[in-house]
Length: 32
Image (cartoon, rainbow, N blue to C red):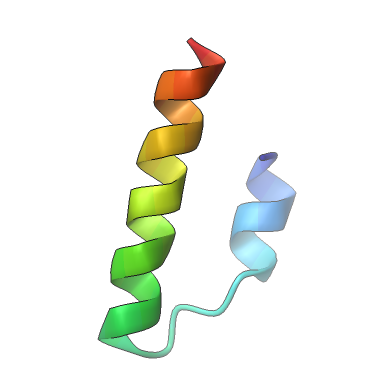
């Protein structure tokens, strides 16, 4: 995921943010 894509994702609710952080962490680990 690029930073532009991350900025486009909604951060309005806590649940969405939590799952987003989870996906970002997984992507970070998968990316090396």
